[in-house]
Length: 394
Image (tube, rainbow, N blue to C red; front, side, top):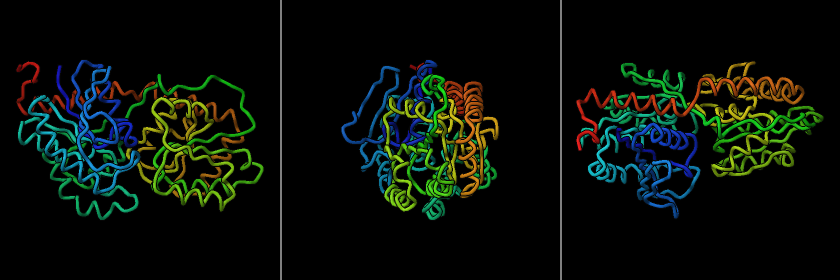
């Protein structure tokens, strides 16, 4: 038995894909017989110390976090400062064997501090926005300022891990001499399962899940829907699960394009509510402009939904064109409209792609495999450092 300290400033119910990845990896590490402690942000009335039935312990430390769905740079810096104090204090008492830092910043410095004071090796789990060169609004200046620190943290880690081949390539362009391992995201195929077979109705129910930010390409999706012939468009509904800063703009865009009656913004759903949202849909649409590896695409595939997605890093690792979904270039409004129209007009195609996606995730992606890969990689780093497992040393 080994002890793993997982550090992420976001952990459910906070955050998005990386938070869910941390949660699932923690749960599966515990199921593999390891001890797991998660260090994350305090928020609202969430307990500062939580010991779950699955064996995972969660410590929530003081930060300035104000919103569930996103964190400002100031709030991330607050977590960085707080974790620099709390992580070594916790590590000195709990004695982990390895640390996994989700995001090089703001979580990497705390992992490095634990190593500096206790000799515990750490792995950096790259998630997308923490890799210089990853594109979305407002991040290029951050990368220019933080790049030297990010590279410094990578070089002192026992491993740097990307969750897709595309993200690994981006990381290698930033740091050509840095070895980059790849461990993909997983999915709980039992939780996210297909709905019972039913006859296709007259309407097509599209689903999007994720942060409501420009990066996700929802503005292009609205334009694509509006460009469809009236007969086709009027038979399509779109449900958006998630929230974010551009929601007011998108609501105005939907009204301007005459889509208000067909677009429903549901906001964030709880963990127990999300599987039902997938099962209620006919297809999943994900027109993102940039990604690491999107958990939501895996969840949609596990739920047996055909996926319409952009041909970008992350999506390319998951969606097999014409076998599990339809793909198009980012910002290609006509191609997105054409893909949606194909699914609307061909229930047999929807069924074939959905069944293909379900098979793919069951055969190739599981959180147990992800957790085992992180465990083996982290313990290899511990062995290289000459450390004895804390549970053996006691």
